[in-house]
Amino acid sequence: MTTLNNNQRPPHTVDPVTEVEGKGAATQEEEYRVNPAKALWQFFRGERARLGLSLVLFVLKHSPVWLMPVFIGRITHSIEIGVLQGDYERGLHSLLLNLVLVCLIIAQNIPSHMGFMALFSRAKRNMEACLRSGLVRRLQELSISYHGQMRSGRLQAKVLRDVESVERLSHMLVNGVVPGVLGVGFALIYTFSKQPWIGWFFVVTIPVVALLRKVFVFRIRKRNREFRRNVEMMSGRVSEMIEMIPISRAHAVEGEEIRRMDDELEHVRSRGVKLDMINAFFACANWVSFQVIRMVCLAVTSYIALAYPEKMSISDVVKYFTFFEVIIRSVQQVLNVYPMLARGFESIHSISEVLDCPDLEQNRGKRKVRDIIGEYEFQDVTFRYKDDDAPAIQDFSLHVNPGESIALVGASGAGKSTLMNLLIGFHRPTAGRILLDGRDMQKLDLRTYRKFLAVVPQETVLFSGSVRENIAFGLREVSDDRIWEALEIANASDFVTRLPEGLDTPIGEHGGWLSGGQRQRLSIARAIIRRPKVIIFDEATSSLDAVAESLVQDAIDRLIAERTTFVVAHRLSTIRKCDRIVVMKDGRCIESGTHEELMDLQGEFHRLQTLQS
Image (cartoon, rainbow, N blue to C red; front, side, top):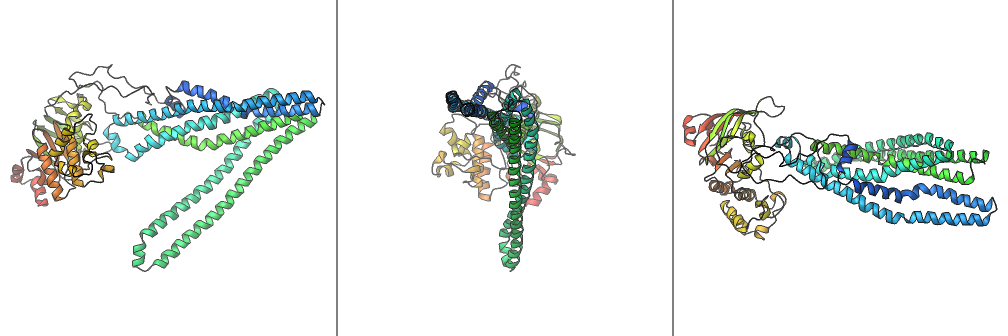
């Protein structure tokens, strides 16, 4: 698994040069694959010293819980000295001394607890932030194929909820498992050192306590899950009923719907009453069982004190009974946090799916791109998606001159978008190769290549910042003049000028406060401001009305001047000004030429044009 400590940062980005990056330019991140417990320990790399010191303070601050039975026994013994032995002064002295000591031990809980929290909170929060940073970095490194197979919501859950679950796991381990284990351990060690037979009684009793707890909790949770499913089904039917109100009203079947819902509500009501009675029984049975076990412990120690007074005193009975209370609470504490621990370990596995994924875009050690002319050559390119029988691109060959505009047309599934993904470098050819200015793209660092590339997708991708932030996305220190120049070329300056705050106007989530045409023109401005050498338009006008399409098309015509341009289009009327049109079918190039040449050919392009006429 790959993770980062607090001192690690993204590898330094070297300025583009035409040399091969040296092996020492970026350090390989350590990779490991371990079980969840070891993975959690690895997550705290860089925080282990702080974590260790916090655990020392935790033991110190929690010590009153484990030492309390000892002092209760000693205080009881002080009473025995004064009452049973008749030595009042010695008994009082022992009582006061033990009371002072136990108060001091209790009082130290405040500074030790605050010190523990200061160290542990910083350690786990640093781990949490670093783990999210490592996931974000890894997501940026993973191939587009990986992102295509994984839903964005699932990846978002890994970065947010799974990391939060790991943070809670570390919290539960320290605040739930550690005190439980140490409580049982201290009680057993002390008891075995003083009264071994009482220690063996505790050892036999612990599994019984754990088993009873597991049985009762399991049955209660099972019944609660069943009832929750019933409520969820009822919720779904209520939602359906609300959606169907216009239909039921139109067909005058309101009464039938009411009867149907009443039956459903009655079913849930009866199941709820039954659940309450079952939960009540198991809760009281659970309480009675533990009280019986406590009384058994009291009976055993009391019998030993009566039968063998030389081996166990009254103070010992009180002390070991209190130790048994500590053991029961500790076992229950560990069992209570077990479901949270299970969820935390599952989250570690989920995070590992990203950190351990080998499907990375490999750029290290490849030739940096300093500048491009914009000449492309596809040489017998074939590409097949994973698990697909037929290739998406097959034996595709095409030469594109610098500054030439190429339109790609064809029916859905012809391979147009896949070809563009190959051009961007999101996918690598399964066979054949793509040459950029005579160089095999397989041997180039695609990160530096994409600095000369701009993409205007069909679905405009904007975020909930301002106009300025969306246009200058990823760029630093961009002047207003440069932004307005890009807006002017993109036919967007007029509507931006009318916005309440101009460039600083928020545009809403995903640009939702703008129209489709306005969003697309901002997307074009974002491409222009990068001053690209190559531009890809992936059906940039397909979802616009006639007026918006005209404005966007005019912006596209301005942008493609003196740049190598690829235009994927369904509307054939938008590509008349392209230098060449490539017609694709089943991943192959079946026709190529100007608009007039293809119309004269009376082939596939002519058929598509006729269908849209």
